Length: 117
Image (cartoon, rainbow, N blue to C red; front, side):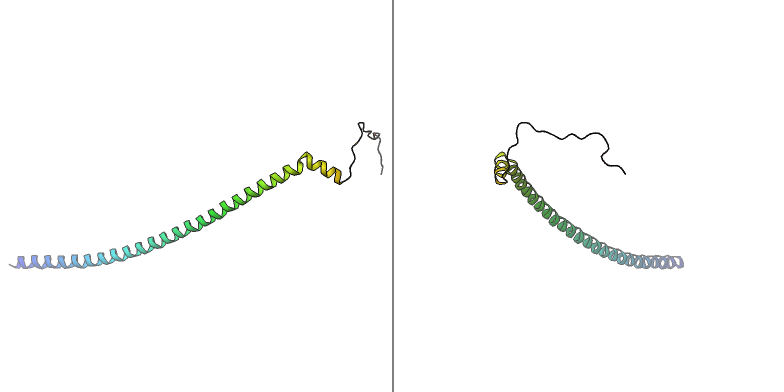
């Protein structure tokens, strides 16, 4: 009987320790779970926020590209019109320039030194 009571007492102590251990482990598990959920929530919000900011920046850059392409087309058209024969002929008349003759005489310089120190 002593042995049965001793075994029962040992069994009861073991169950009590397991209950205490189990409660303690659940507390730690719950606290860790809450901390993990909070961390992941913050991470998710910051990641989504970062993606939204990058999306806005990407849209701004696309708009800037479109504006620059339009400006480039306008400048190319303007350049082409300024380089046209009709425009150059009109500028020649406006500046009262005259055509040169068929033959142009150039001055030749002797190969000697022009100035000495």
